[in-house]
Structures are given as structure tokens and as C-alpha cells.
Image (tube, rainbow, N blue to C red; front, side, top):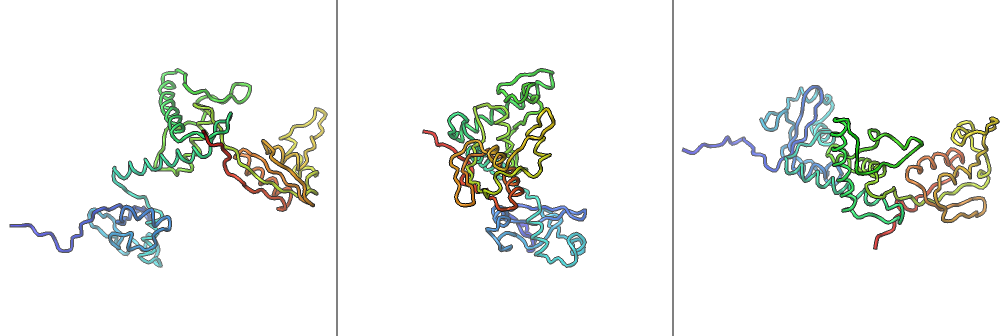
Length: 312
């Protein structure tokens, strides 16, 4: 005799759960796997295309829906069911299967590699590295990091890559150097690419540096020869004479100190304009300085985020 399934049982397939803990309870919604990220990015706006069931659960696997009182207590009495679902969708943690997790990690890995490859160059030729070369360099750092941990545990010290010297004592100690252990799915690709670049530049498994930015800077000519406003603060940066006299630093001097290489400079009417190459790390400081010294009349315009030369 065949066993009949209950008529009200819903079999969920191709499901991905989104969970959010709020008010000491965990709430879940059942979604289609490919729709969650589309909804979060704004590509999909219809909840019916995202949800497998238009309900909030305490446990999807057990079919246990969340009582109305629990929802009101956690999300507020004024929140509608759609408001609650949207909050869970946007803030909740997405649960995926092993296969999907590997695919996500693989996509993130390639995204990190592509970001790094687009922002670093060989400092000698200013040419870009291929994604494959960046990947091999990061793999070397990752295996070196694991080896370093083992050596530290045994009181040894060695390494294949050589950190850049910085200062009279030969630079930071190895334990203080930025490290790279591989891509993780809990951080964004952009933040991990930044970590990867710091480790590559610090350890130099291949000759590497950040690609410079190309900027256009304009400043009123009336401001150029003025001394910087925070003279005491600037004197600490520039240094003082042995007699205690503060070094006089003009606005133009300070702007030029940010620029590694000047491409062009010209004066037109009451404005001075200079185009040059700047290290990415100096961009914010330059913008803040110019804004403060010129009361917003000076401008910094990005002409190229990363100046590189393509390889043959």
C-alpha cells in the first residue's frame, strides 16, 4: 500500500537559507540560491522572485514558522511582514551548500587577483604583471606564512622572500610584517586585495610596487607663496633648525612634496595647474591639505587611478 505524503507538505529544492539573529531568537527565510545577491545589489526588486515561501521561520528544515508575537517583539510592532523579510534578506547571513561555497570562494579569489593585478607594477619598468604571476607570488607568500608560523613555534627564523628595509635597524621585524594567508569568504574582495598588496610590497616575492595615480592639481596663485597655516604642526614634519627657527614651508612646496614626478605645470590667469604622478597613499593627504589651505578653492582631479604600461 503506497504511503501518501501530506497534502500541505512543501518540498523545498534549490534552496538557500538566510538567517538573522535578533531579540535572542534566530529567524530564517527560504530563498532561491541565485536571487539573494541580485536582490542585495538591486538587480532584483520583487520579493516573490527571491522567496520560495513568503514566510519567516524559526526553522525552515522543520517547517516551524515564527509566531507573530516573536516577530513583533524582535522587529517592532509597526514592521510589516515584507519589512521583516527585507531586513533579514539585507542583513542576514546566507547559508549555502559546500559546492556553492567553493564556487563563491573561487569567484572571490579571482576577483582579488584581478584587482591586485590592475593596481601594481614592476617598479623598474612600470609594466603590469599578469594575473598568473600575481597568483603565484601570493601562493608563495601564503606557503611562506604557514612555514613562518612553524619556524616561530620552533624558535627558528628563515624565509624565501626578503622584506624591504625601512630605517636604520633594517626595517620591521618579520613578525610585524603584513602577512597573506589566502582569500576568505568573510571579507570583501576590495579589502582583501588591499591586504594582498601590502604583503606583496612588504615581502617582495617579485619586484613590485603600487601603480601611481595621475592627478591634475589647481591652486590660486595668490595662495602658492603663503606659508602653511598649521606652521607648528608642519615644522614637526619638516624639522627645525638647531637655533630653534622653524623651517618656512610654502603651500607650493608642500604640494610639490606630494608629487613624485611632474608631467606639466603652467599658470593661466590667477590659477596654477600641475599634472603629475602621486603614490595612492598620498592622495587623501594631498586633498585634505589643499582643501584646508585654499578654503576649497584648490582642486585635485584624478586623471588615471593606476598608471601602468602594458607588457609586450
